[in-house]
Length: 92
Image (cartoon, rainbow, N blue to C red; front, side, top):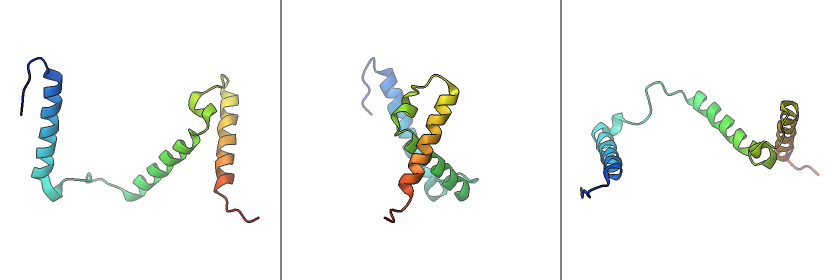
């Protein structure tokens, strides 16, 4: 490792990344998922994160233009309905 004077922050970040890489190599196949991994829970979390991401595509939700909670909730409901209608197959 090349150490330069006055770059303590960069050196510590580099050292941490080297330690992390060495730890991964040392653990080998034993590394990876935590022992309490639950595939169904992970799938549900992914669904929720993707839904929130789709809701944030609506500009008024992402920036919170509405000051009143009632109006913001109505905007959220309209965005959900819009997304659900967009997901329906086009049968026309």
